[in-house]
Image 1: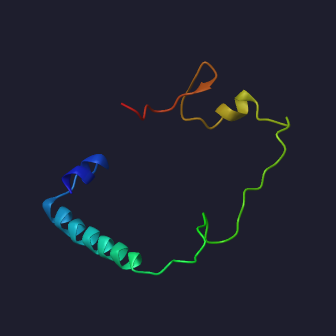
Image 2: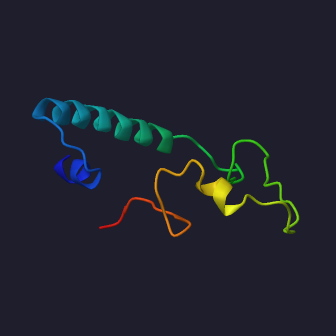
Length: 88
């Protein structure tokens, strides 16, 4: 649990850790139960419903101006959006 909470950058109390260990154990038991389902003859699929991407033509059209894009930006510099660093 320490490794998982570290990877998720969560600070958990000992009570929270012990509660989550029990919950994760239940999830793993559920996966074991799912493994018992006979799926022979079931065709693999990517989605539960028959959906597909709707593509549009890649053609130029009206775009926002730089001023419009930066209008609600929390921070900008040299006509560019400034975003927080997310990778150490």
